[in-house]
Amino acid sequence: MVFAHDTEAALVAAVELVNSAEEPDTLTEIAQLDAFFVKHVYTGAHSGDAAELAAVRALRTPLRRMLTSDRDTTVRLINETLAKHRALPQLVRHGEVDYHIHAVPAQAPLPVRIAVETAMAMIDLVRSDELSRLSLCADESCEGLVLDLSRNRSRRYCSTACGNRNAVAAYRARKK
Ligand SMILES: [Zn+2]
Ligand SMILES: [Zn+2]
Image (tube, rainbow, N blue to C red; front, side, top):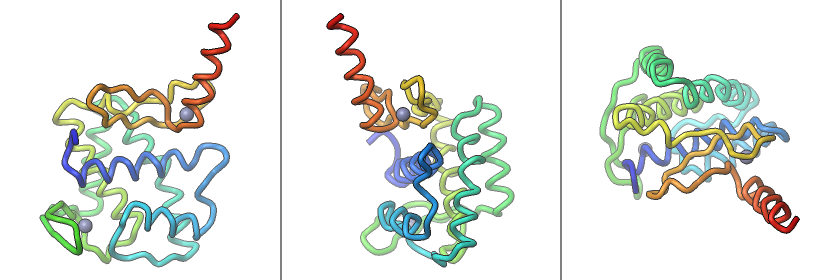
């Protein structure tokens, strides 16, 4: 593990959320948000209605900006997010999960918690000068984000689909 477990979990979820906006959009139904909630082991408020879905969908563009801007802009966006939602970091543990940071109450709306958790995680990337862990997919036709948490920094594609497509193309190019 490169970063604390809650930092890595928040980044993985944020990148998946941002990438869900790539065509075809994979966050258009409440059931898809339910699945995202379960997959990333969120706790706390989850209204499961159209308003919440719309708010989470609307978060994708500002999150993408926070995750892909230059360092100073990213810092400004992190600080704005934390100030806007009056983040107050607290160490908590619940269920099976050992101590980790919650910076807004569990009953805060899901999109607010996602925004604040992402901003808290981005703090770690900025101050350890590890923003290069985030990049754009190496596939020329893909705008997806890549989060590389591997020690040898070997990830270049946002998905196995993009990785496989490019492996096949490289193989064909070699055979010519
Ligand atoms: Zn928690
Ligand atoms: Zn891709």
